[in-house]
Image (tube, rainbow, N blue to C red; front, top):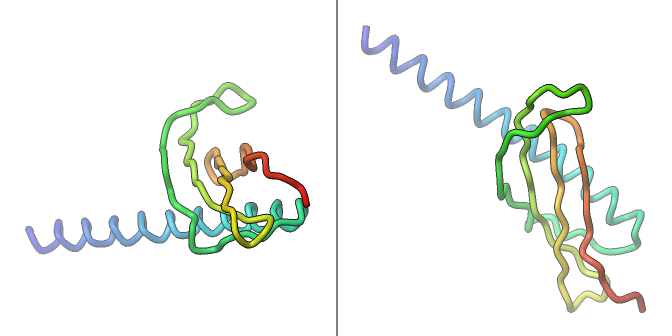
Length: 102
């Protein structure tokens, strides 16, 4: 019986990991697209899951929200912060820190 429980726990952990990787890739695609629109360079390896919380969606249902932070640069030297918030699997908001325009 303990082998079955162990296998179930491993399977659940693998499913959770796969889901978090999928959500992170959604956040990366959204951030990359927004940075391209703003004419700045998205720094791929700076994306970090920073927060989880419950938020209400447009219909008033509670959903798990995941916040990811990332960095981008406008000059190649200075780095600025951005933030992506996913509500469930959907993009809720995306913000770029104000940066100087050359």
